[in-house]
Image: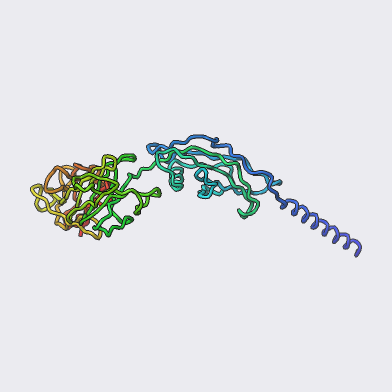
Length: 355
């Protein structure tokens, strides 16, 4: 009986040792070859369209499995970088176990923006796949790099800053003017001015700092801008509609006094009630008793200098303003704080706050 027990014991030990031997063999991994990218193709061109449905797929990245000598779970990290940087500025798109990855137009465009690519300009970016087992630092393997040509877009309007006495000559906090579209140089916006000021372009990173291109008056104070030998533009303290064209090298600053008018206001359509500029919020405000009126036939509007030449309404009743837009309705009678916000150039808003 003891002899049988000993045989059984030795048999069990042999099985355990064999199992350990098999496990050791399975865990022996070596780098045998990185992935091969199948799509996109080297040199493929991608032009992103801001008018297309932004959830549509813009790019599919696919690749073959990496080889570690034996079957095992593999993690794949997709990296994208500006060409020529050797992935020093790489953006990680995802770390996954699949061998394909898709990006929508919106996500792809956002990624390209994070790399600092210039909108509406063709640039070159590199893509590679890093594979790893467990800890990303263990047995990493890289695919060959694929280079593609991309043209991103932006829906943001280009802007220039207006630093000056009115805000302590501090470019990062200066009010902004916006152009009508990307590539256009017809900047405009509303600014409280108080003495000297200049116009300043952003740097390559989109930041406003001294050292970037700036413009001032040519010394004649006749609305002519120059980049060199300029003097500061100047204005007496007031709220201005400011324009600057950095290609035609012209500028203007017209004082605008805003008021609210309409049959929802105490004076009806006969006269304005002037609004007051609040420097803390950079908005125009007035508190009034309003009567309930239904737009678009009735209500109120905002206009400049007691005249209808420049007026703002709300055609879609969405809180954003359009020049010569529809009347703004008042939902119920009561005392309101009326706020007109012109601080975001070309994207003007208002609010009616029931007190």
